[in-house]
Image (cartoon, rainbow, N blue to C red; front, side, top):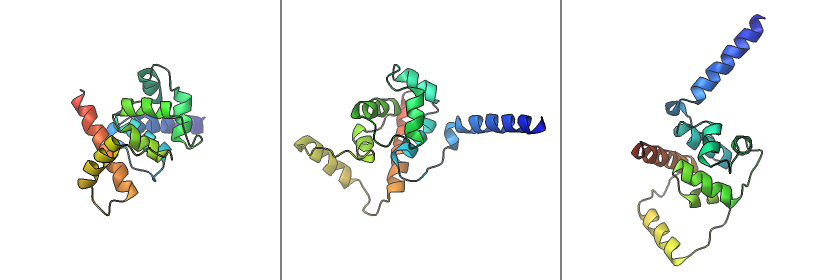
Length: 142
């Protein structure tokens, strides 16, 4: 019986840490980890995201995405999540492995972004910048 109690309290401790927006830690550069980190940075639960997406992204589907069971979600799902997490849709599309068309407008925007980038930026640093940007944008909406 003592094992069951300690297991339940450990589970509660995991949930409370996971819900704390200031406690997220970057994980390897993959879409699922990035989505989980962005959600945690915003202080949202899986169910919160489901509600914010007006149930177009279920919490079960998002959990599978975050755990790497679904590797390439549809562009519609990524668009919804980009809006909720306040990150660039194109960044999520690239992370999911989609090729983006090169339009004149997009290449102009990319040139502007490239002017402010650092040449030796690692994928992990880029991911951290995206999460920090999401954090800043979430603070503006408070």
